[in-house]
Length: 333
Image (cartoon, rainbow, N blue to C red; front, side, top):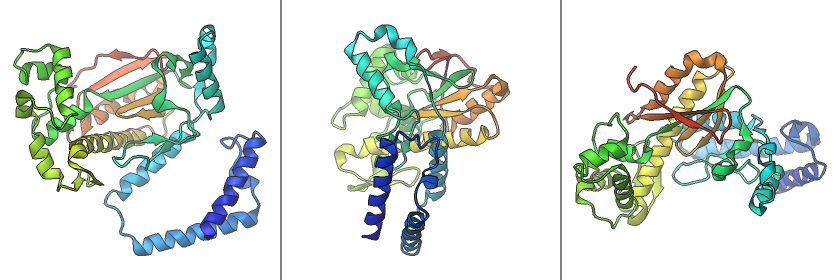
């Protein structure tokens, strides 16, 4: 009851500051509220924290969650460089006008929620810039604060996770080309192989004898699902029915695998001008400065070197978020 009372007062302060058009990314909230309220707020948080520490076991992934919380807090503190002038000539479209209005009504900061999904995938808070639902044809409005954006993303991340969990060594080439040759014996081209493998992967009822020979769904479920819960490679436990079990194993494992790479990159960028601008599922976008170009290959190698093996990484570069273009890199240095 004390917590609900304090939170109610906090919300009232936030509403009043919003009406006063105060930007809390530029003005400290705690400098604006009475000291008496701050003491009451901190006292009840201390009591709750002490109770949690006394009664709850420390999670196995505690250090990871602490690191991830620090990372998303760092991203939240970075103002985005948004330029709506590049879509001015499209304002005759109702869709574009509504999007521009939405962007202007949101904060120009990305605010992630670490606990938004059961699988561990990041979501964004309501007040966040809508980075996870950012229409591709509008992305040119987002520009770097440094020299350009560099995007790192795994080539077919979830398929590679499934392959690793099946005990198969990672291919160094594009995985859809590898599937066309090694799963479908050259009887399907890349696009056909891609459609067939995803149709099989995300439908537990689907049968594909050739795919099952390389991607052992039954073995993975046997190792990670007890009939009511899945337990992932990273010791995350999630309630799941048989229909969702495999998807949860793959999605959660891939998400944790990616976020651990992001933490490594975040550490590598400390003290540098470049920084992580945003994360979109298994894609990491850096706001990159040319003065840090000497570190780029090490960053790419670190991103690729996952807990489940070496994942082929796609690298894209652009001077805004809408014109990112893939660049070929050498797989082995």
